[in-house]
Image 1 (cartoon, one colour):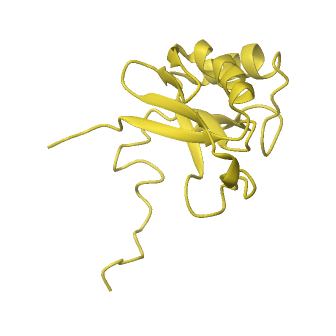
Image 2 (image 1 turned 60 degrees about the vertical axis):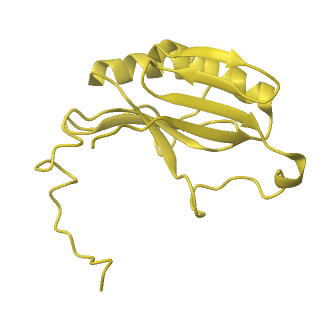
Length: 150
């Protein structure tokens, strides 16, 4: 059997603010919002759904940090380096969305991306990495040095 990722659901602290943010970053990537209820907002690119849900008040206090157990970041594919650059100039800059680690996109011909955070500090990446899932390409060709069965 083969499969693809179906959906990702993110609990957000400020539901309306997060919907406005994800509208800004997803619509230019060709995603559409399928629904928006008081319980969830669902976006889709035709294959994968991204769902936002308001977090229950009793869970708001701890906040999110990508270094804790759980989600580290979400990455969306771009078709080319120029698409990453265009997204940076046409979406991130006009919406005053700060990039992480350096100003603007970074990388090389194998892996070129721009990284930023959503309102809850979930890291988001737009990446052009055409060989990213190729077993013979970086980083998949690094030596495996950990055996989880020992």
